[in-house]
Image (cartoon, rainbow, N blue to C red; front, side):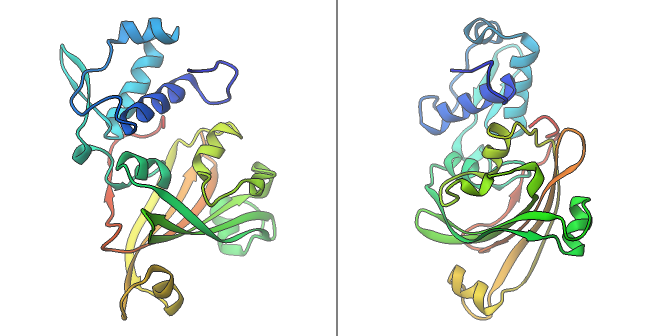
Amino acid sequence: MISRQSATPLYQQIEQYIVHEITAGTLAAHSRLSSEREMMKQWEVSRITVRQALNDLVLRGYLYSVPGKGFFVASKQEQPNEFAALLSFSEVAHAHKQVPNSRVLKAHVIPAPASLAHQLQVPPGTEIVELERLRYLDGQPVGIQSNWLPHSLCREILNNDFSTASLYSLLREQYGYQLTQGRMTISARLATEQEADLLALPRPGVVLTVDQITYNDQQLPLEVSLGLFHPQRYPLSVIQGQQSRL
């Protein structure tokens, strides 16, 4: 169920297990979770570890707490809405019982241009991974997502099949990074002809834009991303709250 040999922290493994049980329907809306003491015994972990996992899931919108009674599963309408820093596209889709997939548009290593080098805090010309995907939910295109990461921090990451793989899950589970903070800017602009074609937008089409820098537990930039989203198929509702432990 959880592994002490995994690079993923125990509290995150517990979170992933509970989210899976919720999205699979094993834990129904408004059902009560086991007590903290029962979870401590089940997973052989400390109360701090259990409490960290539960509190994070409250902040992420999967659970709510009732003083004196415990933690309960939030209804589907209360669960993560469309977009949250540090949640992957796949996690949000599964929370809504939608099927995510992607068409890879770019996946290669490039020299960092000055603007990206500045954001990633590396010298210009440093090798960075560039990943661009057309994102689908239930077969409909909803977004174009581009990600840039220092190649030295994620060697061989492009060996994965990003038509289905989650970048954030790989960074956490395969490379052992803790994604602790995301600085996000949301705006809107007219879509280019190519963007409108990919997203099946009417002309003139508008896209919602999300620029984000994601930091690790050393407060160093790990990834820069740009998301362009269909405003009707993927309206952005941001989950607020302290997410430093996600």
